[in-house]
Image (cartoon, rainbow, N blue to C red):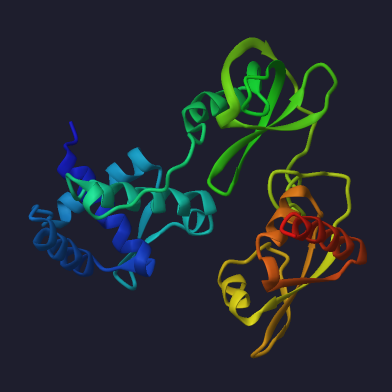
Length: 299
């Protein structure tokens, strides 16, 4: 039976490798020694124990750590290193382990107050997607106890701004819809299976947010930010298509190719006076009219 010391040690090993992507056993030993001093726990290990820990990491976390003999270093496999899902897993493990380090977290952590994210549905939803099972869900569309029932085939899961959504095909009309997991009151997996003919591999390629499409063409959008907002946009890219047009002491201008959706419009409005839409004209007009209506409320 693996005890908590073994699990904690494995998490430290993952954190050390994530920092530099590779390390010798001596470097890992040194890091574990530092963690032992810092936490008051004993994480010092032999090479034999380390090899067992690698097996534990492979079995529990599905992360493969390999050994490069000519350099004498351990490293994440290429599949893991290029996998965004794996990277997010390690980040979650780091947070989890950090939270375990103190008994009274309220002394040093200030958590954001927010509604549940629907993560309690994730396991069953993944099961339904993997097995191509139809589900019946009860959905609260607008948080006003306006419940409706839907029978759908779940196809993929989508994360946006810390919330989880499921993209599903309605059985009654074959429409592709997106449902927020936190608004699903309950759902059940039915015995009936369905053959999925939808290819959603590029469904969110041109999307910002939860609205995707396989048929709509993206727009070229040019945005001009103030220098202050521009520094943030350079670090936190708005969209993978983002390309810098100019970066000066007074402004930061970028080009995007994406669908103009409700989520994207809300993102633009969130920058207030720190942003200007240069193109396309119809989006510029839409933002101007929205801001005008908002300003009228304060007259």
